Picture 1 (cartoon, rainbow, N blue to C red):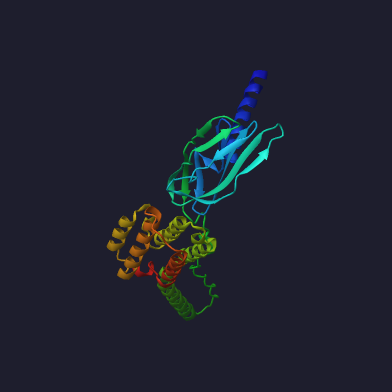
Picture 2 (picture 1 turned 90 degrees about the vertical axis):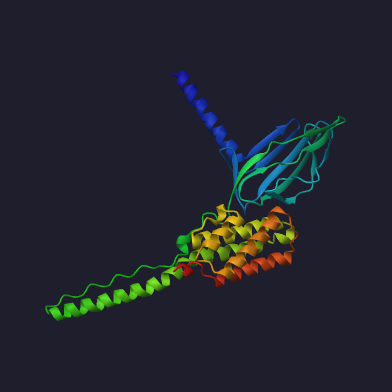
Length: 319
């Protein structure tokens, strides 16, 4: 019995350690140097959305003194950008010696499977030689901008109110007339709702997209030098809106594949196809070719997308 109890306690302790390890994030230790990343882990992957931030900390401890040489870039991974980095701090340990620490915040710039590879760190402990430590690449799954959007709160009611029951009457004529009037009212209501339903179907998607545009604008990413993330988030809003209204897998297609689908679709007008072509190609240039884009151009892009969503009703053109 005591052996069984000990086994149960051991299994429980191991499970608790696994849970704590996942909630605390990820830690990589290289001798006196440590990397800590605060993120939710699932199946060995970090899980974030494009609008999330990722906090990381480098720590180097020495018995007497610590000297650290920072890399020119904290990461060169294409799917990540440094949002901000604090100045390194050196503090004295109670047991003697020094601890060097630097905190920085990263943001994802692309969706899908993205590896985060931080640059090696060079340091000297006390009077020793200069050491270099490398970090393991961290896999991450980056989801789109709008996560868990509650469309129920935005959906327009389209159901028809039930008609009150007709009072019984002994005369058949009243039954016939009442039934005819009720039938005509129902037919008229169905006709009106049928005409309006196509336009209403696109309303939730448009409202969600416009709300996301306002949130992206409020983040002021271009002014902070994060043009790549701005373009990625803006392109994600447009692609999700197209998926919701046209039922085209825009987020899973390359720009060329989407433009071909749009060309073959009868629901997208030529002027809309041209707008989308220019917009998506501009996003690709900023994301993959690092084309220079000014904050003014970024603000203009948001205004153009907002106006296009407000003026266009791609779902209505299908009918």
